[in-house]
Length: 188
Picture (tube, rainbow, N blue to C red):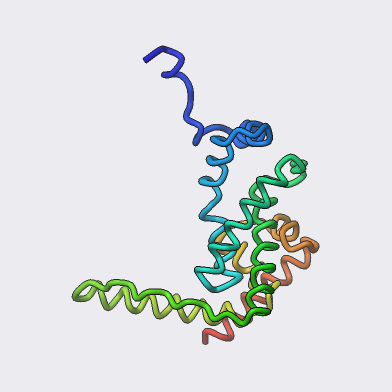
């Protein structure tokens, strides 16, 4: 092993700007790192918007295909993550339109294995509560659902939510607060 290899930092830890430059130049390894870095975030957003694992996986794949094709046009006016999540929102909406046109039914999730004893009881309670929140979230209008999901789950600022939703920062705040208020009503 040479001394240079010891001082090089792994691609996973490489700064985003350098990864983007390499990915724009067609470096597949840099593109793969970007996909791995943001895969979970993109999937969570698409799943929250679509409510189906299968459709969310399709929308996630569409997101990365579209983003990597459009990467040379990314101007950096927002963070890469914000830009990518906006593409994810668009891919989820497209997937939702395709689904509603074809009248597919979502696949049901396999039952999770449950252990024995008190842990099993708590796990069941947590799953039931999570399912209750998911059902309530699904009842929100799309913009409120998106604002709540991006703010709570992804930790985005109102400015980033506005960029993703294609609206103003004030509208993002209003949609978030109305969504939270409605969730509280639905859950009580």
